[in-house]
Image 1 (spheres, rainbow, N blue to C red):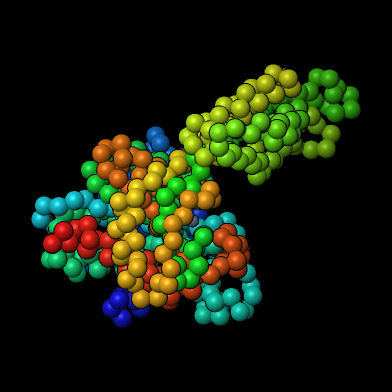
Image 2: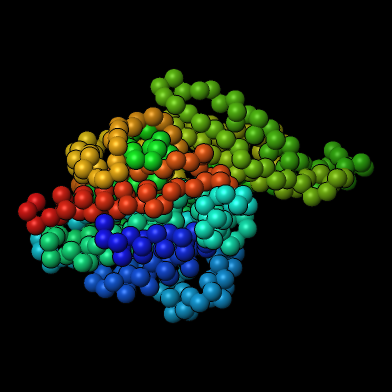
Length: 427
Ligand SMILES: [Zn+2]
């Protein structure tokens, strides 16, 4: 790729890496994206409720959003931009070549992980001076890379629009972690006219120099926030008058591990957090749990959700407390799209630095790009997903790193190569 564009892409990734923002609070990142897109020119930039359906928003904290807006303003983000977002991060940039042709969408996510970056001086972001400036937050999943690649692709598309037909939609998605943002972008309808949508991720099963073609493998998942509310009492004098939210939550956590496995596919269940009680000698009034289930099909995932709902209901009765579940995130499975994967395969095979292109279907995590793809499919389009490699010790770790100067150009070449194949004038 062009040297100036390469330099800009790496600098952008490193700038975003320094200012990690968790899901739904990506105001600084989103402003960087919009400022760059406006400087490039030629894009119609959609923000706020044009790209996020508030009714489908999951796992968004009004308090964290308020704090993030204050922080963004203090860091130079203009109030006029905050107003444009209507409080919802996320952006879709539309480029119309003015010539008939398909509408192709590329998706990049923008949010970080809740983990502190290692202080190890050998860790590249420390050695090169672009480590996270926000303790407790880090781009430990590479979404900084995804956004930087998306912006490089944007500049390339704008500069090559005379060689292209149809339209492009670049999706800068908030809140992928916890699979919270994809559903709301999908439900906005902004992708309903898209013929094909492609998402990518750095790392996971792909090592440096490899490109993975994802046929299936993502598990459907539902993130559940579970609340119990009991009745306080003096733990010594009146234990019989209290109703313990803590005990209902503990029983729920134990019973969730006992949901029978499903005979027709893979399941997962996790209770990641349980906070309960007020003090040593008071019957606990409040309990809060963050839990999740997964399944290798939507039906199997729903089987797990139904089981959790029954357990919460049953324990509410058994312990005499109130139980409530809120859906905090959702992703579905990835349907195989061999035709689009063949396009990526043919592009990836010709990229400098790509030594191996492989097919991938192992069950892994979950990805709410699947929500975007499902929506596009429901409207007659298609979608798929690929991996571009890096060498890492594990995602979401304090020492996660991606060898940006080697890994990012591969993703850039895949997206722009696919754009030429699908929307080239000769296509
Ligand atoms: Zn990720």
